Amino acid sequence: MANNFKSTEENYLLSYPYFLNYFQNLESINLENLVIGISFTYSWMPTILKALNLKNTEKVLFILNEVKKGKLIDEQQLTTLKTTFNNSLVGTSKLLHFINPKQYAIWDSRVFRFLNNVEPHKYRLEKPRAYIEYLKLIEELKNEKAFTAFFELMKQKVGYDITEYRALELAFFKGTPFQNK
Image (tube, rainbow, N blue to C red; front, side, top):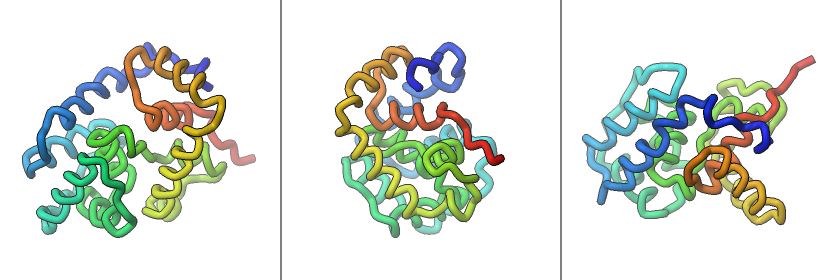
């Protein structure tokens, strides 16, 4: 898979390091950072941000700052974030990744399809438990013997430094799509 990846054909890769740097350069995340961050996150989505529910702002900011500090969140916290951001686990996962790319991977329909070999209907894709299991899978794959060679090749193909989570997610994203025959 890594050999078939061509970074010059991936326009969205240009914005990626800037999105990461935005959150990396913040000491902590405040409401303004949250609104800016979720807005640029949705520039990577096929849909617009229609619902930004700021009823639980303090709780949401607490969770996001914990993510920034390296804490893994649970299903309930993930559900709180999802409810805040367009009720979308996909959008939430992208924001989490931009905040902490070493512990959170991007989750979307193409990744789901590649890993599960079934259509990513919303009721499957949007389950917080599925995302938590995906993160556990990535942790397991990082420990495989062949991972180091794969990771080095992916970094070379992308053309700049990426995390292990990003390397695996990109491979899943670019993997052969499910063919329902």
